[in-house]
Image (cartoon, rainbow, N blue to C red; front, side, top):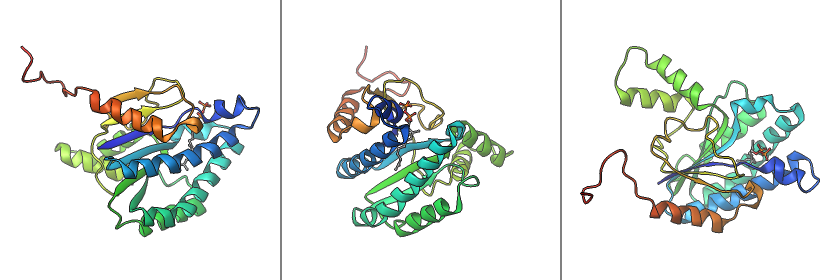
Length: 228
Ligand code: FPP
């Protein structure tokens, strides 16, 4: 099962507490660890987290710098835990605009966890689904096969392994939109929206979303055999 999460609400969480927005991102990073470990203990095979969209470059310079620093520190500090917990980490998205120190942290955690097989954790950084689709279409050129296109799509985002379609998409923070996240892969995703700001999101809510998913009837555009 592939779960995608749009971790929204860090900024509002911090502002409501009289803190800078970056404090919300720091609190959000702590929740990332809890949810990743909950996913590894459940029947989730792939977890894709939206950490930084290509549109996020338009945020104030200090916020962008703080997010990049947080990401780098997270990747460095989580590497040993990821190996111990069997979590393969793969960063998807563009790499040509990332700073060298972040690139080296990405390279290092991807190498260290390459053989892990319990959970594939994909962190989307400088990610734009539209751009990925566009790049894949351009690279596929005249080759028409869908599988070729999908391979190109994975390559366009540096995805190390085929993650398949998203089964469940969770968005926290009260908004109800996709924000250029996994547009292709979410074709038949079940959507669960939570009003909770990401820094307050708990393992219990994550499990409740998985339970909600299990109750959904998935038809993929078909009619179920037992309906008249
Ligand atoms: C959206 O909230 C969140 C982000 C743009 C950043 C998400 C980053 C983290 C959760 C921490 C770092 C990530 C990892 C994987 C360690 P927002 O800032 O748009 O919130 P708002 O809508 O309340 O302003």
